Image (cartoon, rainbow, N blue to C red):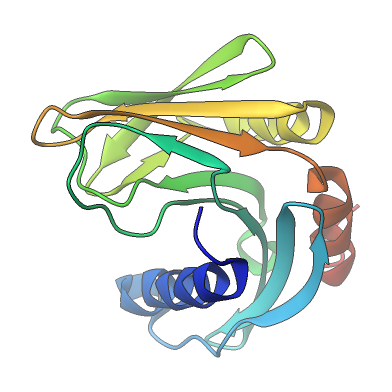
Length: 176
């Protein structure tokens, strides 16, 4: 992808925008970087005084016949005040085709995500946990989706550093 420092600034802006414009997250402080762990980074921020910790990465390879695309990234998020952890979300950089699913394949095992707007999620907490464990134990992840224009995209991620990033955000948010 592009220059990592520029991409990271774009990524931080996109993540902050994601948290800032969702109605239940009316007030979010700027994210603070916990650390860089291989191809993953860990962050903490406070939404309405409640701690949120997340790990994030961008694809090492993005494929598709598109003319332009926004920032693309994956997040695994802990929100201890809401008693949620390992929440998987994927920002595609485009709006998904309505009613379409996206897929994640980690070392040969496929997971199905539901989509809305430019985001895809695991269907429930059990699937979030399975995806989180697969990310930490895997080496390569591929995400596929279809845009509103019918464009198929394939994004490949390195999972190098994901275990260390997960440990760091878990420690930061007091999750064992």
